View 1 (cartoon, chains in turn cyan, orange):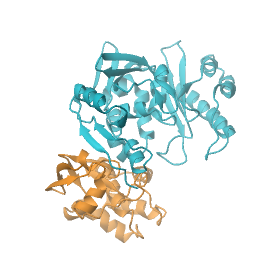
View 2 (cartoon, chains in turn yellow, green):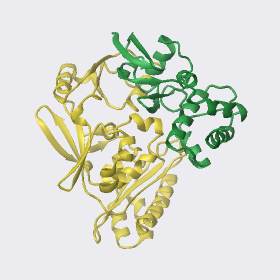
View 3 (cartoon, one colour):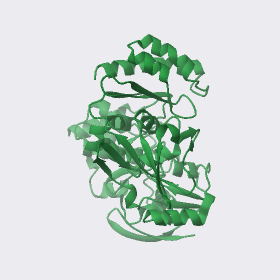
View 4 (cartoon, chains in turn cyan, green):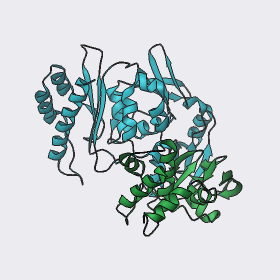
Length: 276
Length: 153
């Protein structure tokens, strides 16, 4: 299908983005990589009055590391994320997630900021942000505020982003040398996950974060399974999942299917973390 | 609303006025009559509209034409004329790697992108490289054979 008509404006700086958001309010949508938004426009699932193209905003680009914190600009493309040496060193979980995100042609354009702001519950990067205890930097004319990933994802496609804000960057305390793994089951390579798990261990002696995707309305942590896993009780961790995830029935199958697959993925993740 | 657009397509400068809602593959097909790239699913799943833009493969249906301002775009027509995919095309022909041909332009773009990054891929890597491109005729086996043959030539 073809999109319904809309207007289009390019912003070259964040102040310009804020001006355009002020002027157009609810009728505006920000256009980053467009790999979900343009598909939704084509299908007429979304029909904004105006698209505000932020691809030219330099302040949203770049990957840097300072004072133990990795900062990833919101416009970082998936392909860049997967190839960046700072990401590979300080947040290897993200680098491992990239090959699971759709296909090479999509990774050319799609951005980390777009993926987090869309908050698809079956997408990899929101779960990685949760597993990494990432901080999301939200910019508005009034300045920046920082929101923890756990507070950012609020519901199905719902986030803490306000209408006058732009997701500017993601900040992650270095995870250099800490074990991590990304496990995912999909019908075909590149599809959204039926069930996925982003697992990030802390420093030696600390816990492990298990962040699930495809099992509910948001990515979610399973603290009881985490505690059992840290205690070396894999069977207990797998059993704990029954009370911690409540997956929906859909075309893939009934909830029991996802419960089963989650236990399988947890087993694989435990083996991968141990083998680190 | 129509906006001015200036870009390079297959090495030639192009200027046009476009509606913001026109995606890149429709612009190439309808305004420039470059109908080699196909619009299949139009939501980024089938890969028939795969293009090379600024040196990287992307979906022509998931980028608006107005976003290609200043970009360098290559379609299957340009890649054919330059000879860049001649070996792949010969191998597709020799191996019967197409039947209806609808997916073929995108498949060639994906294969060329793969071989540029990895000149001697394994069959598994070839399957991964074309995993974003659907073919409903061949069952993929002949396509994998053709790409493998081109890479070994």
